[in-house]
Image (cartoon, rainbow, N blue to C red):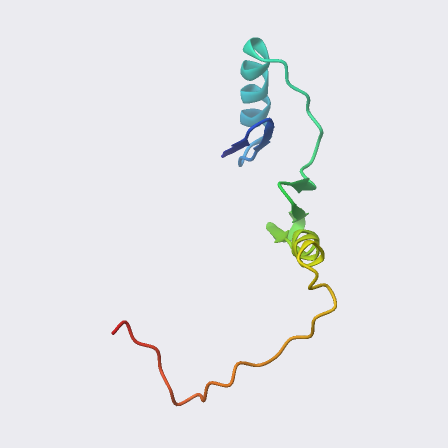
Length: 91
């Protein structure tokens, strides 16, 4: 899997040999820089747990940035006053 956005790229795969070959082929035509294991991309914190085969994505830094930009950093959550018995419909 390859994720590309402007000048950011993340490569993922089952076998490290396939990833290495892909990077070698790519470097023949383009100047690339390997920054190692993915930690942060496009405002998303990426956490990998290899032993449990899990990848987690966290956007809390981006959410904090948006809240700060719009002056909402210190707002408090409120519940929406909609009773459980009501359902939503397309009509």
